[in-house]
Image (cartoon, rainbow, N blue to C red; front, side, top):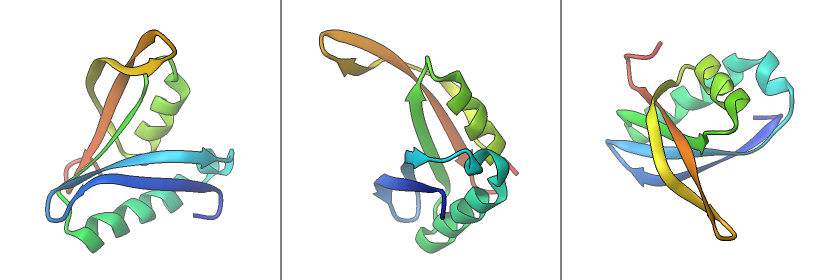
Length: 101
């Protein structure tokens, strides 16, 4: 993308995948159209219906960025992350092909 690295997991061709932003610069905020084009390419290349992303609930700014990219918050996954001996919630966001813009 030029300003970030993404990873795709849980890929089921013809259905869905999960995306993870591994590293982002501030340019992601300034140029959301580049990320949107990458998501469209992902939809087209693998004939996807759904792309989802889970982020720690405490990272509200990341959730706002996902909305800027076209994701919609679906809900919260309780205790999905474990760090040391503590569990943390994650918010799940998705884009369903043709419905989120």
